[in-house]
Length: 310
Image (cartoon, rainbow, N blue to C red):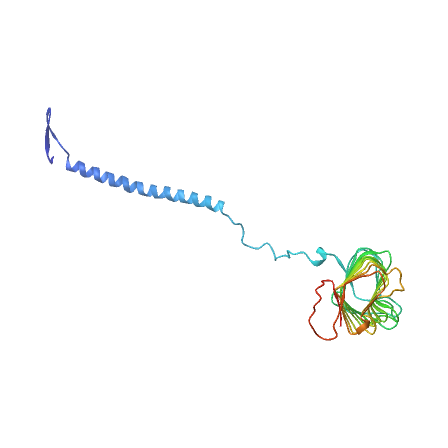
């Protein structure tokens, strides 16, 4: 046996290490390390697998296959505002609700185009026209005692022998964005109370707008080529901001013969084409000053309620 060295210690001499023993120890250590490496790797892979499973469970998205074809998500017009179509005349509205034209409609002899016999009605002409015939009656008739009616957005022309584009005996009625032309007596004939006529074009009738009711606001309309543009036979109405041209008679007229035609407010209107006959008022009216200009010129009157005549 070989020893690499000895040291002296108390009690005698002892060898330090046997080289063979040292080599065997190193070999045993390497063997243990080689044996443990696969175990460590296996444990690491197991830990990663467990973590990956947990993450997959936490962030799972489910199937990527669509359940079916896309479905509409917006409400239809009928779901928002249920409406009833009108495609022919004569037609009678007898229930509250919203109605609309689906096409141009031709009148029938001795009949109104559309009759309104109900409260709380909206009639949208939807850009279409109610075309009369010579022997028909009114384009639209709103009967007395019915309230809260609106008619808008279309053309009403050539109705009746001595009748009207729209005949209104109802109250709280709004007529707006309409074209009324060549109706045999008047474009709009109003005998009800408390309503609005606005943003309409009225032409080619003996009376453009005939106002027999009270509490009406007539604002922002264009009237052209009627015999009388606006004719008022009752009181407490407001006629404002209308443009009236080419009349055979008066542009705006309130005859004194009608004793109830008082306290009408007439402001900010322009009437052109009839000279001295542009305006005619009975007593007890509330009228902005009338500015007359025979030729083009500078307006010197600063009154904000002034009417113009030229």
